[in-house]
Image 1 (cartoon, rainbow, N blue to C red):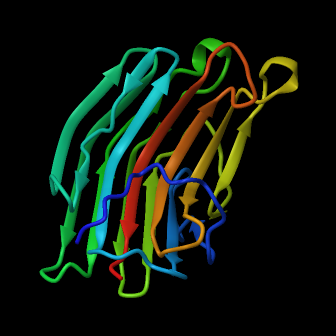
Image 2 (cartoon, one colour; image 1 turned 180 degrees about the vertical axis):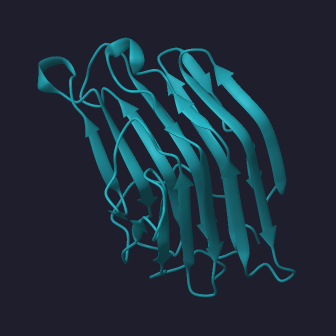
Image 3 (cartoon, rainbow, N blue to C red; image 1 turned 90 degrees about the vertical axis):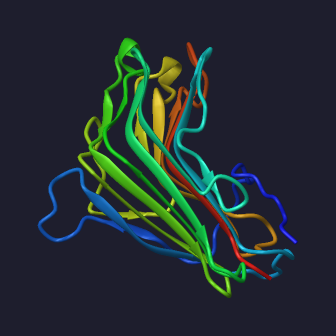
Length: 229
């Protein structure tokens, strides 16, 4: 029996550690993520599940729905050449592939993308945030699930050479000393109690998270895995 799950799990503490590291001789703005492993305390019944999409954005009244979504419970592969909302966001050359083995035990999802550009902060004096390319992957194991991430060509903000899970960059300059935006890399979301499943966002931009002239969220590289039990 397949148990349907959504990508929007509640954000709680994750087991283990995952570090995004800049490889030797990498260009500035390039990074990768070491394996993140989620181990179940009590797995839910059903086949393994994997799902993902290249991203989604909502800024004010503008909504960009999930781009190139795939799922082992539905469409197994999707592509989208470009999605653009002027002065807000651009996603280019996106693809997602979901797979599951014949006995329903090992499920994988791989999401890739080309150029990503977020322009919605510019009218408020913020930076244009760009990626040249990205890959997000999640796969189940017989005892849990794990994820790996990488990206190239980050500009507009800077990250250190080693980036742990849920690493947040704060962009100052909002009203009353509040942040103009936060950018979370390797955002890992797991349920409580843990069941081995997890949702991972390669990057998540929040506009004026503590209040301001508008609100907005932009996600890049979202993957979800839930193991068999």
